[in-house]
Length: 329
Image 1 (cartoon, rainbow, N blue to C red):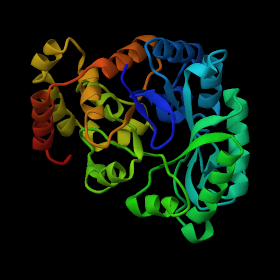
Image 2 (image 1 turned 180 degrees about the vertical axis):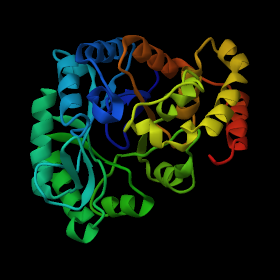
Image 3 (image 1 turned 90 degrees about the vertical axis):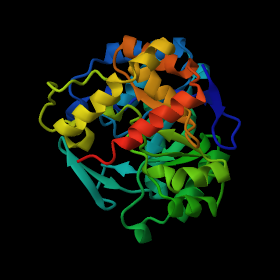
């Protein structure tokens, strides 16, 4: 398994990370079985995955609890990343969304950050977090300034409760605001070969400033595995219903492209998912790829992608064919 350092920290982690959003289940992801999720996480660790990313809001704490159970007795083998800033415990902060009876607000107040951190430590069964990330910035920054947020995170780092600081779903301006006060080691943006918006400004800036990226949705919610055929439907309210690339015409174009890569999967003796993940972590500025799994076989398959090295001409060919798809209709 290839490994890389998180920003300027001394933390080394596998290029393939276990993304624990889906194991939270609920409306977003449908039914999930905790024991299966635990087996999947442990299988990933056995295959060399050391980085596990979760968040309190994933299943309202369920994802963190499952991760905590999975890593019990092996804390020293993993790099734990979790988040703060999606707050549902009272009415502080601007409204973000409502789901399953919870009202979720974007709120990064120092007091609530500390509250969230203590909850996460308890659920995960640990006394420190390796990478602590803000989940979303407040939509009303004048009431929730990044300066206050970063000062709190720096204090938590000094106290030894977190080892490195990250920010999810941020733009270059926001990254610069974090950097004005201290070291930001990582960002977590959405990125896949079908969604490359961050290549314009964010990734070049991160390369220049030695900031790692943990990209989420590299398989475009499963579409890029080639396993979501034209007959696949999703239950009402499921997150994937909102993705443009999963609409019928767009999906067909993507599936045709994936089918044309059969010579590459033969060449590298890998699955389409592994080929796509290997391409993703090969892109400039992409440090880690967050790959979700709820079953052991999927976790093992994802992990193997971290051992593949694509030849430059093959990676370039894939990029050209992806770019030829254009924007989703």
